[in-house]
Image (cartoon, rainbow, N blue to C red; front, top):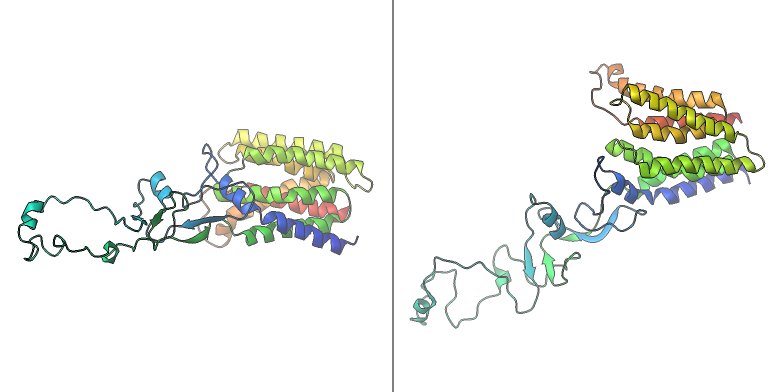
Length: 340
């Protein structure tokens, strides 16, 4: 199979898997200490971890939240709920400024003493939905999160949230295609391409909330070591599994030392990510390992100093370093693949 065919297959794989990342990205993008997200922004439950970030339930309109969102957030206005039964008008709060019913029944033929807001006794009341601000019963769509007979004003159709699936698919597809083009038909290319979408997910989560979840970093390090170990057993491998393991330990130890020196500048999630990146870089030797590690710091430094280079004030806010670590490691692996 030619390199062009491998690039196409890898790109298709990346696009297919990348299109499933937005839901996991949304659920994992929480601050440290908070549970993973289980509901969409409208309050509907999110099922599963893989798939597009799109809720099949109807969403609340621009002025009114959904009942679930209003129930979980007391600062949101309560939606208007109307009964949809054929003979059930909306319930009205009792009024205390009206005379007793006996006074109204004393003169049935005269004008209503209660004023224009009440009907004469014996006269059929108009449709309560005709009044201002009251929706017609039965005109609203059923509440997808509650009883089927309850509708909510201002409701629209299914809605999306989080990153569009197309953007994540293109990102993952491009990374997988680049790896396939650099590594070619060698067995380690399967390991790199197979694990690349997980690294893409980590980069997106870190960029969103400056966090690298343990649920991804540690399993990814173990998977990278195992996958390259399998590649080392196959004919045609161009790297060393022993160097890959040493590279993972060396880069992890280096980042751990930096974390202990400056915990505020380098998070412990970066230390765990360094294990995976060190394994990937060490496969092609210490030269590639050093290049990938250095480029990660170089990319981060250029981003941090970019306002100064443009003549603006220095960047003061913290930024996620994981994406630059991954970019440096990707560059190193591409160089190692082409060199091999």
